[in-house]
Image 1: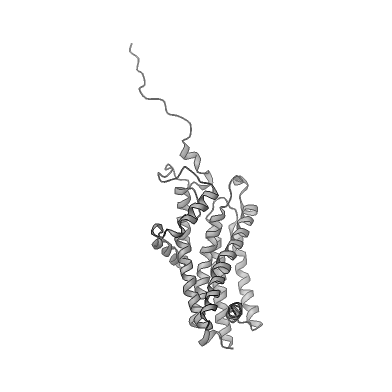
Image 2: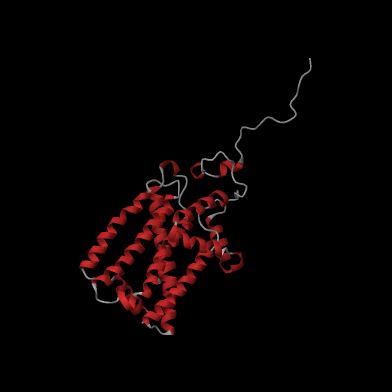
Length: 277
């Protein structure tokens, strides 16, 4: 009686490294294996920051077309922007952007809107330079770091699921969410309103105050909604809808500002004007 011997080793029951690299909470539930493009060498946060900052001056390596696509879709369909962040987690082991093209384009828009403010406020060249430095360094970068750090700390402390305590929200992703949410208000309040300020918004009419203050409500509402979408894209968080609780307060804010005859756009112009004098 002849015996048959196996010529191949028995299948291993041990998990492959690829399947253990991605936390289960970040897996999409698909029966497909880990994408081939997934990076198994997960870098530390310091290494990621160094790589990101090193690419800031390498414009040829930046994907400006994709960054521009993201800016457009932050207005028309911000959900699609965060689907790309989820894909980046699956392929590059991080939610945060690794391409500074979005930041570079944002700085470009800050320069454009600063020129518009300089024309509206009739600023001198020196005042324009001070205004641009304040806008980029203080209003965007410093304020963005403060807001992103606060939301990063709050979400990690209060919103992480009990079953995901071994994971946390990336600080870089929190900063990206802030920049995403910051861009629509920037265009609304620093670009769109400039075309209407002198001829309409600055007038002492109720309809002028209503229109100007309504722009602020839309801008803040955009910020809150896009922030909510950013954190709701993280499967390790629970109840991200808490960010939406502030939306009804915007109607109260609008009513109070109108009753007190406050022109929010006028206050912004006065603040910017006296800050650079």
